[in-house]
Image (cartoon, rainbow, N blue to C red; front, side, top):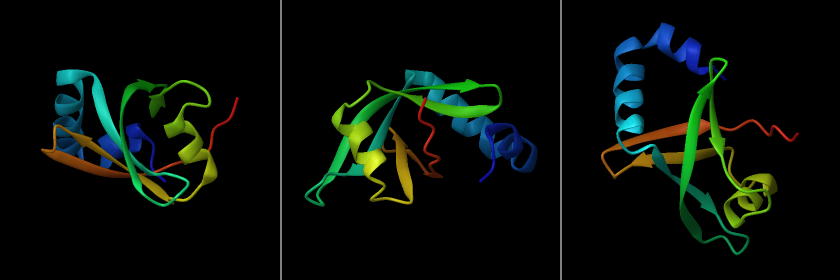
Length: 94
């Protein structure tokens, strides 16, 4: 899985477009699967920290629990339905 820095090196035009769209609202829409298998779409904050795209949320919020269950190998992020990005997720518990 590439870091944001690696993404910028490999596809600078696409990375710039993603960053521009993400920055325009500072919120992304995160698609996950609920425990019962139905989709859940939730707004989520983001930041690029030390070359990594990090998603922020409240510990044990429903969307966080969806991700921790690991039902999806990747999550889908969307900006206003215009730009969709599929990301592999690393489980980074602290």
